[in-house]
Image (cartoon, rainbow over all chains, first blue to last red; front, top):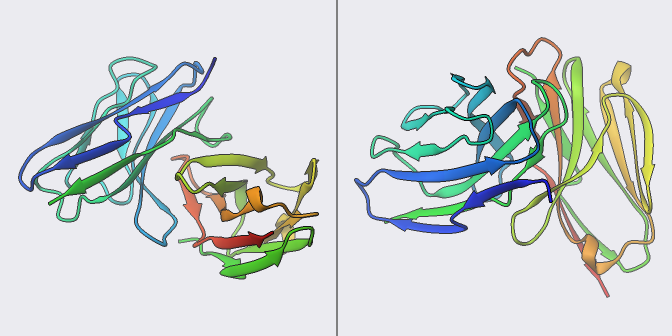
Length: 112
Length: 111
């Protein structure tokens, strides 16, 4: 059963703590993306990766970091430097850059 | 950068009614996708439609790239169609794969 999985579904953290969100895909897609969604808004790109061991900043990368050591995995770390980390985080993948993107179920992060 | 505007922002329908959602964009695009975000937040792919017309059951979409708009048609609406519909485009000059999202249309279908 091919798809994109994200875990956990809900995550609660105290201010000042780093937290890592998981994203895994078994679609054999080369490109992967992280987006952030705030209430009542569309999505904004945090980071993207076109291929293993390569990734680039999106529009709102400050306070976030990623790695792409395996084709199927693209974890996102929300660091304590991110000023407003509470949001809904969505991971996506596509066969190649610029092609149809498919999204995972998302992780809701709450930082207090 | 490219602007994406969706209308209407909110829509309330009776079950069985038809509707048209619109997406305007301010520059050339290489990719346009329509999504339905369900109440749990999942983004469901509806159409990948940089140009032309496609149909899938009660839903259809048309993109007229030269005039910079796309339309999503929902016929015989059902309560399960409720949620937020997003249009997202890939700018013609983009090499990042970054989708630019509109603000969405919130649809409520009443029984």
